[in-house]
Image (cartoon, helix red, strand yellow):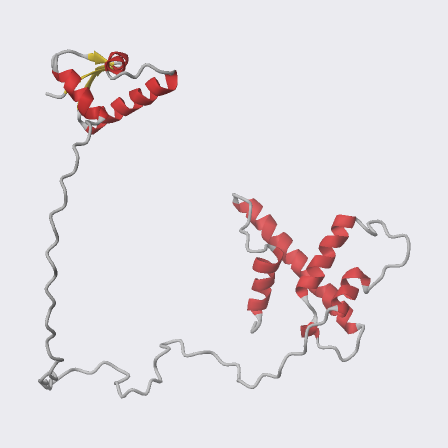
Length: 235
């Protein structure tokens, strides 16, 4: 139970490589979880069996990633699916584990104990009380701020000459459209008629783009849609 994080790491990151379960219902999730636990237990048994063939070897030196990769290679190759000879207790997985033993773990010096469940900051040494304490008085000390640095003389910025006037920009397409529609405010203009007035007489792509644009202007309130592809000025 002190090393359950190692099992979680093997299930979540080594076997699943960080992916979540694929099932979308409870029976499928249960099936996947049982399959993962079964694979994990079988690989651990194969690792222990391999280490026991070499007396004096610490089981913690067996690499779970190596065992998993060897098992995957066996499934891909479909080797020894129907063995014809006596079973090999060590097997390909065991030999791979023994060939890639991890370095020996350093001994543990810290005692295993449960941390304080109340507060992580219970044993602080800053002089504050560990329990709530009613306040009976407050001491306020007013301090004079130290003198600041001498004020710097601000340099006067040279006056810039006025920027030249911007040239007049040509009217936008919407302004030209509004000008055309103001010639007959009560009339409902068809989008194709407005496109011809604006000189948009190209391919279907240009006309469709203009129809999409004028529909957006109607949605924003610049125009009023009176029918299918018909628009008038807003009242």
